[in-house]
Image 1 (cartoon, rainbow, N blue to C red):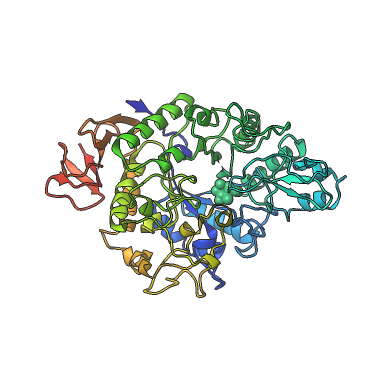
Image 2 (image 1 turned 90 degrees about the vertical axis):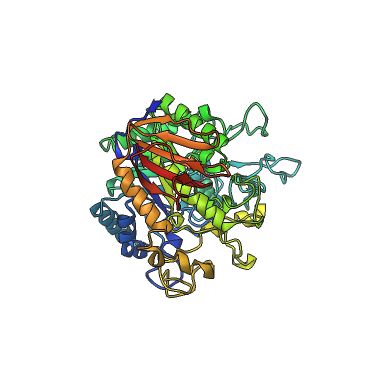
Length: 523
Ligand code: GLC
């Protein structure tokens, strides 16, 4: 048995990720915006979420859908204005919903004034805020290293003066030099800027990549030149002090992709980040043994540092789990491209419903990516000339299929998202998945999420213990009288002894739980 402390909000919150380009469009340009979110806040209140994590909304040339930030203290006109952002924060708070903004510290946009100054004059002080280096070879025309970028491809681009600059992502996202005190001071000031506006938390993009080995060695098995270097922890200790100065309930949440659980947990030590996304769970196959091992690994690693576990099934970078769970291979990894392999959407949806009950009843915080509550699947049929994701050119896989604008109402595209053609095409079949079509239908994904989130508020004992029912069934209790049972076997299993069935992810077969179905029971 293990016990997690429910404590402050971020330890047990349901956090909903808004991808602003694709949530709701208020001004008819086919791209979502802040006023669209404000107009649809009721959807999130009725869903019952505790917080919104807002993907980047800052001024940006959009070389990577806003993860190339030109100014962290303003809003891109396509999304609205700073005044509208402040109004949204206030209105969300009035609706009982906290706000988390997304900060991207590893790199900035090549249109940011710092980088423009650094490119314009090799003697400019801003030059040292980045990683400019001479090239190799007699004429300096070979890249300083052979590092491979996070999207695939190379990591250096030559500046007009002949030096090369480092970018772990696209050339429009030059990496910052975190050894420089001005860079550190600037980001601490950016955190304060948003905390001063009432923001409750910060999601930290690419959190493990900030530090680089200045001797620029090639990647080796012993030592990586930029993944998870020890120095990164000092950055987050300083950020924690900034957060604490606001009274203790502002949270720092890291995007840390890290296969080694112990190294992952280092980010969650009591004087560092409050939480981090559980990509181990996200990438795990729909398999009872592997899932159980993953839950155990997660609980163990988090209990050791006193941090809350998190449960994440999807986000704006990964294939939607309705699609993943409908494939023969149900894992997710950027290195394993399963695009356009056969998908059984009915099976994927059934499993996604069970996964919702699983992820909402495990101890800790749960993240929901917009559209999960509508049961959306990946749009794998976006015409190549409409794909905007810069990963596509480098890896042959695009993340746009999970970034398609939400269907709100009506029988035809754009399903109430906009009055114009949406920036990415929506499948016609989504007419059954609009929020309007699902509202009031007890068998819908939306009503399942609403019921589950409401029940979770009452059924969230800090205690967790496995129930041994069957080798292919995940079953556990939370406290004395609540159990979650997920049948991951191929045949129905008998319902264990209980008083009432509080919620089921699908129809039961008499007193048996069908395959790929989960139930919440009052024991
Ligand atoms: C993170 C973001 C992703 C972005 C990348 C570069 O992984 O989630 O969308 O492309 O960082 O900023």
